[in-house]
Image (cartoon, rainbow, N blue to C red; front, side):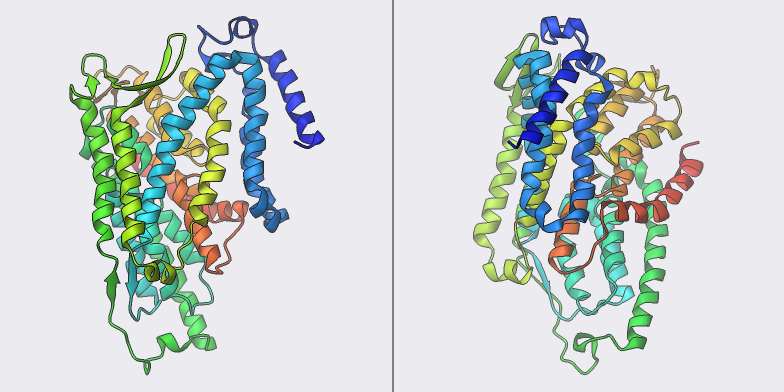
Length: 491
């Protein structure tokens, strides 16, 4: 490690030791709630990680591509080394293992499986990239996302959309609205659609309760699709007028009929979706869980004081099934299909590298929210909608959802949705769910498919806005929409 980096780690360590209270230092954190003893500034490595993602590609994109792994490791160490010294090895290892084994690894395995399988399906034929065709793509993707996940729908449709519009000059808006709709809001209607809703399902929210999000989701989708169509129509007419169209939209060219190849991968997609659903059903059976306590049976991988990290058997079954589906897809799909899809492993590699740093450095942010979330004074649906959404834009929206779901349960509602964290008023759970799912579209890091879609677009020579540039699009098109959501659904 370079001297400057060593110095930064050293300074952070000293400040951390001075900031945590004496009880935590004397006991290594045992017997105290982590979030109540962590200093607020312990989230700075997480902020540094986010700023690196936002700024480094702007300053030197080639350097960033070569060194993003080192940057991710650096900020992880800036957090973990002081944390290890201040709270002791037991607490530090327990928190790290919990975040990586129980959160990050299942997260990346699911993304990897959907990415690998969907990359084996290709739509061939003469498909004109007209505003009407593009609108159909976005509409189908928005509907499909709730049933095969935002990642599955995004990876399945982004490449055909790009191929259909290869001749177009203005394509950035297509990708951005694709992220808004397919990679985020489309996953609102089932626990399979988006990880936050799946966490709610695991904690007792009925599978089809999420259909209550249909009203807000449809409202947003209709408005965004209308805006997109008007914008795309404008650019399309301008390009036709300027003569920028190429032979693939020329009426004299031979039209190749549309057909789908690699359809056997639908079986592997079904395996992945089925394994996710099964992992929510099996914990409700006596073979996989203690029904009296809700404790899942599994393999104990670490024990620290009263805290034990158990890798549940249901998780093992789910993750192995997903990996098997990905393996079978790669082995049974023609290499020609993936080549014609311009399929590479880079997008999932980028997500894996950056999100390991995000997951590790956000440990203190989540711990502080868990411990002090009830002190935020949230009491109305609108407040839960914006608080959940704001943090879901920068933190992973799944644990953020869980924090505010727990906070909503702490309000002591006597009727509503009965969950393992308490009874939650329906209007509060609706606000938390919409905030987590919808506002994941506000930044590239709000939801993992955002990053993957951007990477695939850039691989296909589509110029995408910077981190802050993308936030500018969200500020113009999404924030006013969310204000309308507040006035209509959450007041």
